Length: 241
Image 1 (tube, rainbow, N blue to C red):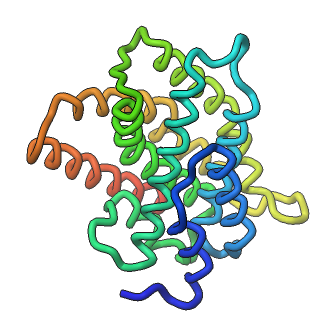
Image 2 (cartoon, helix red, strand yellow; image 1 turned 120 degrees about the vertical axis):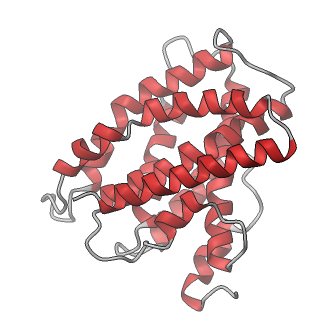
């Protein structure tokens, strides 16, 4: 299926050369943010993702990262999976994950708040993509980090940043152009009560370890089951009243 004329600019942004640096990632996110109208749900996931990416990039923990090279590569590989999913959906490619279809097929749906789109996107990206990004990053760097590794210390430090930044970022998404609340901020607490970003990241690390021990069809079955579960959870987030 050809990309529609209205989606051509977005497709060009997400289907170009894969990002090589965190600056590339942020520039693409900024371009997406400027391009998409407020009525496109992808805009709100992209904005939340952009905000937390900048926070991680600009505010390392006291003493710095233990393995900055690994963490930056992980961030770049991880973001690339988001861009790839959007490009695949827009072009009608087969194999777009169910977890991403949940938000992308509803991007113009009425009655869904910005914060729901933002968290449904984070659900797809973390619960489906993060374990794959971990495996790809570790493979590129010839590593197999355990729970006591410098890489896991950095991973947990990112959790600390996200637990601080995400609620305030979601509040900002719920504010309109006149600095008045434009969305139901009560949904933030209701959604985060059953979907927690830090817990999702911890599970992604564990699932990456699980996948590392599987091969061939067995690994594909595990990934497909995880994708279906993630898609169902994304649809639940979008339906949250």
